[in-house]
Image (tube, rainbow over all chains, first blue to last red; front, top):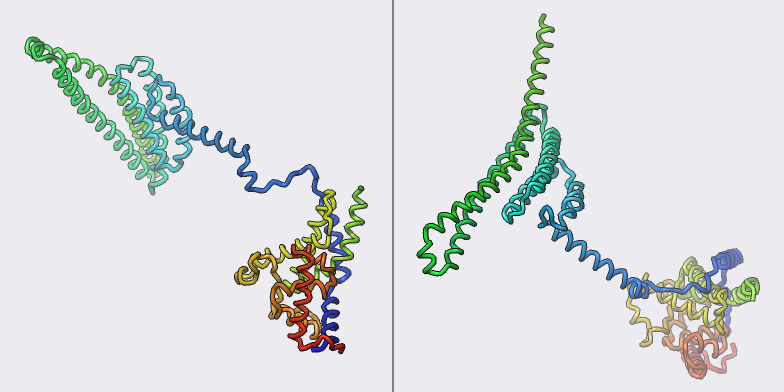
Length: 277
Length: 176
């Protein structure tokens, strides 16, 4: 390649250009772009993330999550009359009502709610705080929840069963299962109470001095046993009352179902007789 | 200064530099559409600066610096080859004269030959020779584009030309 060819090659490279149409179109599109405001600062994403506002927002969110989460968690163990009890029943439980949305989950959740109320009553009774007002409130709650429980049981049974009779049977089984659980709770509660009473007497025995214990001995033990016995029976009465409310609702519903079924059977028989005639 | 004045000044720069900038991009990316995109992007950035009243002192240098960075970014995104192997230690003197793709651009045999010869030069001489002899930029402008001193550019031009002559078998006295 000589110098002339080199120069020619350079000239050829220089001839690489945009077409007039390309040039005009490009200029037009550049000039038609919106003009940025000189007052608008360019802020990169990283600057934004590291900015004080975002840090403050994160901190506030964190504190809120921590406080709210802590409150919700603590409210789980609250009892009627406690400060956090309304959060448990008016905030957390309605949320769980929505979260448990399948029929089977609803049955389990409604069952859990009734059990919770009974447990609360047991805990209050244990602390000696189960007064008439709280008892009435829990009664109302248990009655209301039992009706809802029956309703969701019927829905769950009809959604899983293949025929009407099998749905009724299924519902009956679920109710029976719930009755059994409540009765089992009663036995467990009684066992726990007996154990606790025995432990209490043992503890008191230890704290008493040997002399006093020798003197008052069997007499004290007897009177304490009587006291705890009467206290326990009173508490047990109250708890049983609550349990009976739940069981009564289930029983009433069964009776109603039976009547309904009998009426339907009678109607069917009558219509069959009429047809025969 | 009114917006119309800004537009006029920008249009003058555009008319003066658009073809050479487009050529610069096209030789490096070997894709007409991509070269048009890169050219438009470089001019858009210049227009943003001009419209905000921050016009660069040397618009030509500004355009080429932006275009070079855009090309490097484009290569980083598209090519699987290591950038380090193509750039010098500063990673800025990045020039692409990819033999396989360069010849896809429509141009004469002589032009292709010159480009292939340039490709054989060492990286540091390649761009200065291109800017000096193809685009006809003065050493001062090349120095600003490549972030070098004008003296260094002048030395590189003379050394680069010497190498190119040797490669092409042209003697200094050859007038043909």
